[in-house]
Image 1 (cartoon, rainbow, N blue to C red):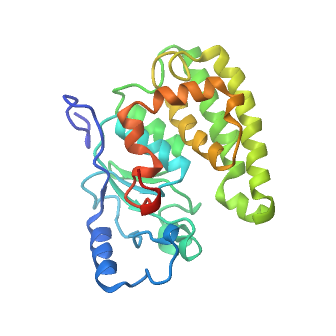
Image 2 (cartoon, one colour; image 1 turned 90 degrees about the vertical axis):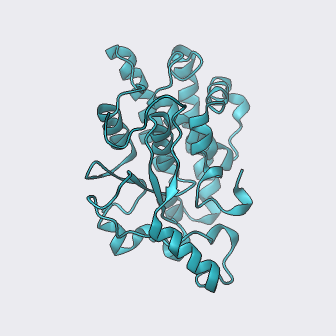
Image 3 (cartoon, rainbow, N blue to C red; image 1 turned 45 degrees about the vertical axis):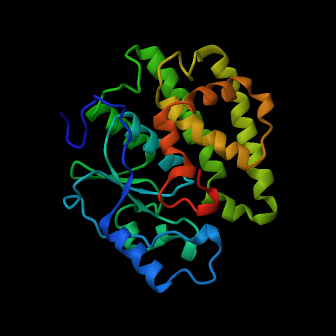
Length: 270
């Protein structure tokens, strides 16, 4: 059995535990109030712990932010594949963005989430992480065997990963500015969803490509959440909303949702 994988006798949902250092820091904050005074609810994240080395972790360790769609994809994959993992939250807004610390950039030079420490390796970029998990832990598969169908899965995934999400990402929105960011994000998501709706009209069954959950689904669900944040009219996209509705019934997707993470603010928790 591959390292870090549990027996598949029960539905595989990761425990999503915090690292011991982060838990201790939370207890310290609760006891002393340090780092919490006069902060808005969205800023109340645990202090980050970026000191773990690849060889020090017992379980895979995911550096994540509750609302990051890229980290969200990886959480779904870990859940689906029954991989028990720990989380170390990285607040992308607080203190100018904890991902910009020199300590974190030693792990992820792009200063982004996710970063996954697994099997003695330090991996960044969500699609590369998904491919690694698929190659090292192929059960259940997230890519079909047929080459053409596999290509269609990657086509849909990359439409989100390369064609929509980066353009409305936090770092881009900060450059666009507060006055224009809603209009900007709305435009690019609406444009991308218009293309995806056409594609899903040809490929979708119960899910994005037929009736098997694939990497395409892992990318689509978090992007639907982004669409709601930017007030995209989802009634224009019945195939997308139908597929995401089906996926929302799966426990692995429920557990990965932004509202159920250790760093989710209390007012956003499910």
